[in-house]
Image 1 (cartoon, helix red, strand yellow):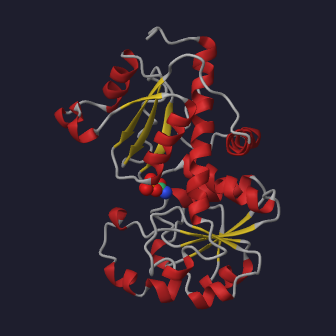
Image 2 (tube, protein in one colour):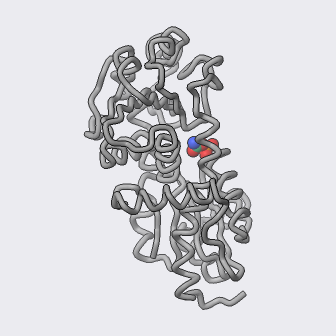
Length: 305
Ligand code: CP
């Protein structure tokens, strides 16, 4: 079963296949689409704009039927377990679920038990596989490949699932990753990068990947740190002027304008922030195709709606 719960288990060739598939959807508007009706559901236990809407768009573009599911009006409110929710949906004909959940690795206990593929749309401070893949696609469109590229991931590293997925995959693909940000938010467990001073990082790299401050995951009061954040660790206009001429800016968004990045830089010439969002649709089409194609081929869904 083609779950996509973490990027860690993806081989290099699989990553490149997903990027190629997304690029085909983008450029040729070609790629797999189901011949018969197929059904998916999006289970979002945390807030989302980009991931949820771009999955919905990807599902529409592929001709899939999305079964509406809202956590707040579902029997999750009555204590239904995640396993029971997934299997309920599977039993009525849903063939894959997209899940965002606040619990790190919520999928671990599920992936061997459930009968339909899970696509992870973000787990706690764990991973965000489709964000990672869309970031890779955006970088590859710009530079052609990853070998020899220098990428700085800047900000709230400890609480960022994006940082974890991206550092691992970029390293696997041959890029060199640097980290920069507040000492308090260092991620000691992430061994896929070297810490640099923010100004050195900005001047050194080809890609400046900014992170949102994940206030919702902070256990301690961080408002004071956040107050001085822009001048100490943010991409100010002065720092942007010191970037290499060809370097680009990424941010998974939502953006705290004036905090991680100066307001006027969000849509500057170097910024690929809205490009990332566009690529999100194509990556999610590729990931849905990867999950659903084997089901269509094997026709291993008993329900024939
Ligand atoms: N980048 C991202 O995951 O955005 P959302 O939280 O809006 O989905």
